[in-house]
Length: 265
Image (cartoon, rainbow, N blue to C red; front, side):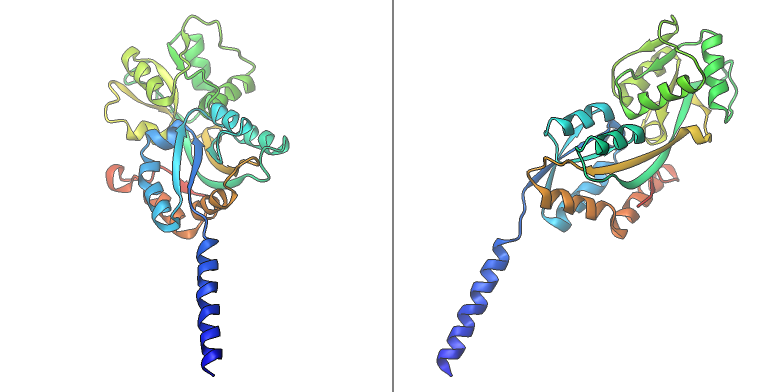
């Protein structure tokens, strides 16, 4: 009986050691858009992810186009981006198995208060008025999700703004682009979260909002070449979980009186 008890004790101890040894932790790399970082969302939610999963996360904040390229180059484990057509292409090319909905917000066109364009919900007419009146428009010009959406709107109108003297491409993130637009009192397209999170917007106000063309969904994908599939899957499962979706839904309410993102998982 003593031998049996001793054997069982050794067996249980070995099982515990084996079980502990299979718990993988480490650091995963998240390539994401400047809007998720500039808005403060990542600082709000990622510490909770690490606390709940024991996975650390390194963030590379760039435009969506650059984030997708990091995925193609195998330099990221997970992508959190917002250019649906490009995300679908990424999956179709085999760089990710699936794209998952996470959240959404919207884009807004901002411009000078008391300027020649009144507040409205017609994004195409707003773009047309800006171009026809030679009003300064600052474009990110960086192949980001925001820039891609801007180009899609121009294309749907059959207009190529490049070459117009009042159309300025800066090749910068959303924060820097807004900064230039504020300084010039020019128009630009911004995601609402980065706009609301900016402490000083000068003389600029929202000129156009509410169009379906301005809807801004975010998706998350595991890069096929990830060396940390367990960590990447842990992030996917966590950010789409009810608790993380609740965190996303509350971000911004205390400071701005409204959420900056809406859960969509």
